[in-house]
Length: 191
Image (cartoon, rainbow, N blue to C red; front, side, top):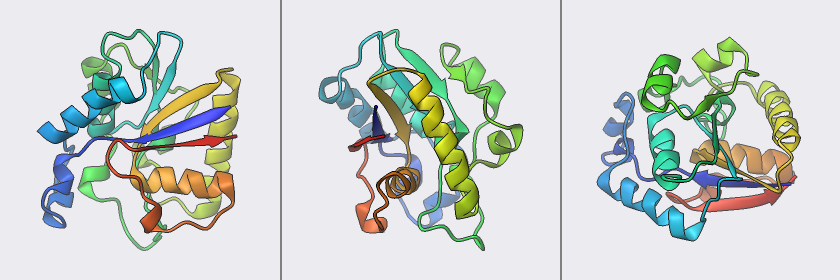
């Protein structure tokens, strides 16, 4: 099975760093919307595809725009929500990386499924500051669940630190922040 990790389009939280990181629930910028539209040609979807999406507005918007008019399966999961890389257990999640309320997701994106296999504490706290051993346990379970979808490819719309954390865990390579993907770049890895 191939996992195709895609970083979300440009978000409002990246326009004036570090102060913009304090924005709660940032949306895509105009550029981010255009980047998401470009994904339609770069990675065309079909009705048979599956996208797993982080429960953060910028990733939900990216997936929604990219998959517009395609009736593929879209699953929202906190197991691909923001994650610090490298992990710093003494840091807290930034306001821009807080998971949005499930009711908001259900109301704004009614065709998106909610991953019901994930414990409620992960829905509220996310994976951003989980100790590495706890993240690896959840990530391994996530990959098993992806394999159970019985697809050749599973697309995952997520965040730079999260993607790099999964890449490092799956490949066994030691990665750094220099390995972060750019906005709407993607990385494909075999599991």
